[in-house]
Image 1: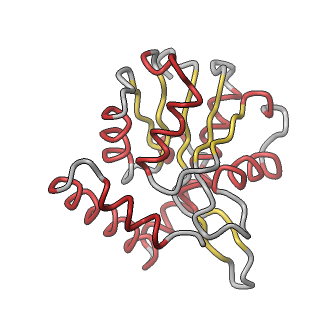
Image 2 (image 1 turned 180 degrees about the horizontal axis):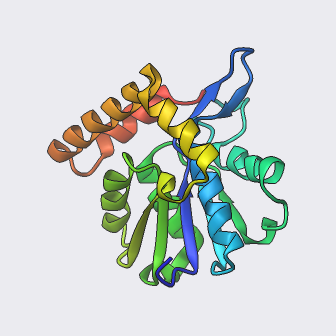
Image 3 (image 1 turned 180 degrees about the vertical axis):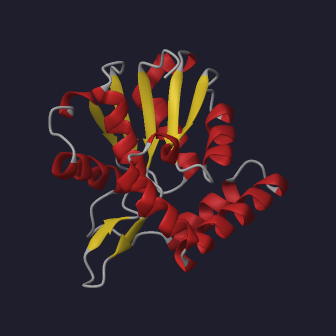
Length: 193
């Protein structure tokens, strides 16, 4: 973990099961699991789950569901390590809002945890926001066999391929509009209520 005392875990998406119940997408489950794994190793002081109510106000935030996933499936014993950032609907707002939580500590080594295909863009955005000693971690690199199997299957599915394709398109768009303001406005107008 390269001496990180804080890790920021980014929610990637919420989805619905076949009965219409809201749930974490496999990417976010892998990030939650990996965050718990790092906590269990005993090296962390703080695990921040960042992700807002991207499906609307009547649903929980990505961060809340990531914490709930850990409590139900892994362990409640790491509760003291978890801080939630529940307002973000974009990677840009993830960076700004976690910066507020960490205040003057953003120059310390901080881990950034998300699914691998999202990591290059997320790292670039967080560095633009002043996270100078950011250490990126791909969630799937530390996942258990069961999470890894679920992620692998998902990434081959139509939904997984479309999410990776969307990420490639967003990266290309960000190249031409590096401030991210236009994409953030689009995302904010299409996510949530």
